[in-house]
Image (cartoon, rainbow, N blue to C red):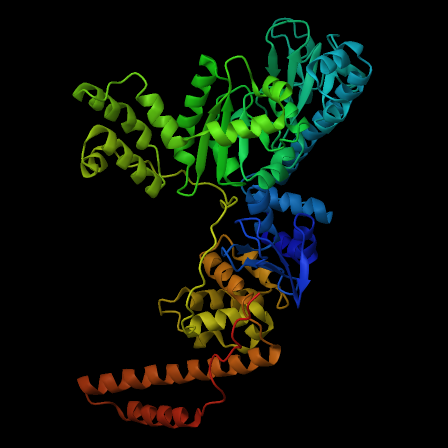
Length: 609
């Protein structure tokens, strides 16, 4: 767990304009910067970045957040990964709250991960240098049509045939870390150690941040297995890792979809021909986690498989494993190459334009592919065939959590079987609830029409004031807040006042710091929503002071009225005591003295982008 005060300090040091500007082309307009939103398709820039508030907001689709949120959404990172990436850009070291681990254990765990990453980086450098010295490996690349620049871009290397070649760069070859990294294997009987990869072309495998976490090796002499991957380690899980993803992010956004293939060389050759949006699973079927990772970057995924029986089996497994991860705005398509080709051979033989045309013309939507496969051996002219179709489709549709997509598949099944959709809806069990997950990137959004603006409730107005100007919190007596009322903003205001009063938050904190400080609390949604709304409003410190005075005046008046009403209600039940009667008089006089000091909530109207 990362301490909150570190996140506050990180956001105080970082400049959101720099973070976004490294990834999008920003143009200054007034006090803010604008770009075309990366989270939904648009031609007119409506994505606003505020250097003053350190917050971004899209006027088209509503995407909003801090520098951390931006990295999560733009790069498909989890919360911790985004903090680590941002800290690396800022030159800060991420500390860890110890939790149940002792300080020594936490330090050991952290250093072990770093040591594993360093070991992989050192091995990758050795393999690259070995490739330069190996005529055999370079000849293989030339035979496969892989250009030197492409090999360099993907960091390809060569593992020499010697049993302990890595000892040249790891003097302590017997240390347990190398075995834990999957770089060496220890014979369980003799205890002798040897390199896992020998006489193989090496493909470094990266995490989403571009760090090497594993390797794949291709045999050069016909030895088995043809392909060999690193084992699963503390850094590497096959079911969560996609080959080429770190290099494909920009290509996915430019193309508008992710292309999933079956092999390393497919990804490499497609990229060499300008198709830079391809990734591949790593010796395993495409998993739901793979699909979730891709849907964090794009709402459109195309699976490209060989046209042989093995390719069709792999495609069907990909479909089955994808269903739980789908959203209502997800698009999955499936395309099959001619039986004699894989993506590598097809693009070399026919070129990139032919490959693009194949996807455009032959890729089947998920629904079409699903029902084509289910009905391939069924005769829907018979009752038995229709019943069997319903039987086969039931467990697949039951996996789908996206309500509209599920409804459309039920409707399609109803049309094909002649059954009533109501019958199918009752017959097919509901999908299991999604497992809890750490914060991660939201899927791409659709542009939304502008909402009609209702008058701002007092609680919302006050929270926005305090987010924009936390220095005002010291002027607001927390006892005035009606914390028993239902609006969550009252309690969010109280939490902010308390945090500043006890010193866990600085009164000069930006909206971005406030949002991240309260992210995991019950107030997180309120802070995020109202910080985003502030980017649609412009008001000065003088406006804020005046409005706060009005809010305080109104809260005092409401508190007096509540006490007066309570005493009057009590007087209807029994005779008031002399002290209670005197108190009513004091309250009425105090209320009369509370003359209006301004017009409540007169913040200037939101300015269009």
